[in-house]
Image (tube, rainbow, N blue to C red; front, side, top):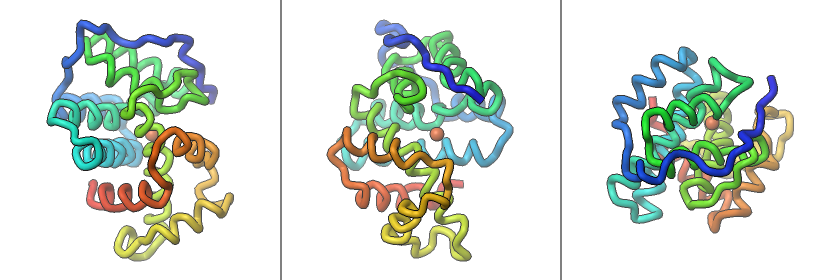
Length: 200
Ligand SMILES: [Fe+2]
């Protein structure tokens, strides 16, 4: 599998600012595009954490929080069906649907090392930080008999230092993402545990 850089720097049309889709519409798209329940759960978890972060930490209004949630919910929508064109296909679909450019840019920049698009807004920077870490926290919860119950930050940190655990999670991406925001690794892990544990 080869992920290609997008070779673009602007996304969506500024005249579509404020043009969003409902969570129901986004879920319908996921149900059509993503048969893999695990991948769908990952996107729902990232969406829940993004929305909660916007509301609790960024003082976002409802529309802004919906943008954060939609970016989380759709960021890997094309990953299963189009692994070689991951990101490009969902971006083009959202452009076709005249979706707000902030949401599209956020999705385009969720892996700067892969897609060649730098995170600019706080929303961009947070999806980059939350994406890998959310998947890692979930892997750490799944191997425990009690799953998320009493999962503490310390045990997640310990697993992060164990390269063989969830080896596909790129630790350098997590470090790079955190260097771009004023949030500690401990704080973000705590926030992720608290806000994705009940997502089903
Ligand atoms: Fe992801």
